[in-house]
Length: 269
Image (cartoon, rainbow, N blue to C red; front, side, top):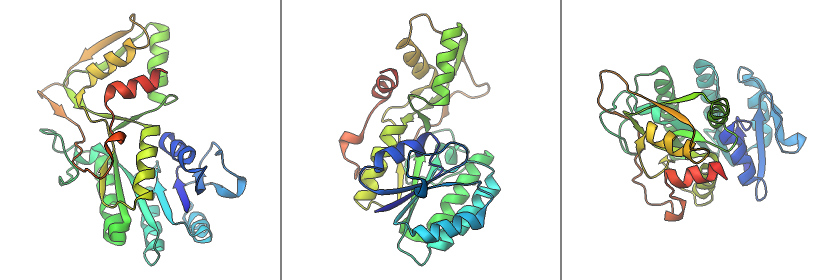
């Protein structure tokens, strides 16, 4: 199976390349950092270069495309529009990495896969626009992967926490933001199962538990050192900011489920 990963040098993209490379024909794009793929299977690409990627995609003719792109929202939307139109008359499946932020306009509760997205932030509104585009053009060949805050053993947010611990600096976290998390390697394994078992629709790929950001960060840093300083903050004018992804689908096997404690143990190994 030919799998093209757009944005393959990012946190999730790297994990996907590693997961699929041994058993599938993997291609990827990058902006600065070259990939661990054969030279003819990777493309240095600025997302504003529409013609360059469309030509490359047509030459590859991938079975699967996974978009982990970042960058200017308007440019991203334009490139996604061109890509899905390119795949409209093919059998290519398009997996789009979306976000919890599609629900940041309704924070009185957590949200499952069937809830109607409503966003207040520009980021959330952009992701909703892309979700709708992909589903409208490709129908059930457009698959949505909603992700919460993603961690990895070399992720920038973890490196920042380690640096603050090293320097004796306070780490700030909110006591009234309730959310779940994800780790790059688990996402990659879940995506592999989705692809290889031809699952369709919307997926929430997150830990099964939801807790305050403060509780999660305290647990995380205590696994590194008991001397870490975590300062609890509170969002004003709100009791609870509910930002969790609920998981109602049952077609991903239970062995793909994991909670925050397991995620943290993987980060501190």
